[in-house]
Length: 143
Image (cartoon, rainbow, N blue to C red; front, side, top):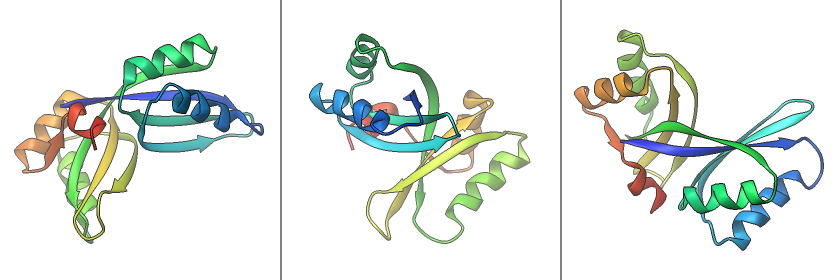
């Protein structure tokens, strides 16, 4: 039920983001969702892609610094309070959210929230026990 995410460390300068996306495009790697965070000197591009192995190989061959992390994808109805219900269940059980980002498949249907937890196995157990749908990596990579 875990998803593998790639985090690419980019210099905060013109062309850094373009280079990373060009390399993935040329390798025919499809980006399923992404998040970008920056500081003055560098940025972190977090990606869920359809082929983690190929993306990793291409990034490494081209000297980009990156790592692979485990995240959890949770499907939630696209309505007010959807995220709050998840956070309430996690907080009651002492799970810390390190970061998150989301996307909506179709407006008015379901959103998918990508979470990085301090205890992913325990978080998955709590989410499932509380009736939330945790998506396996294969489902997310194929969306």
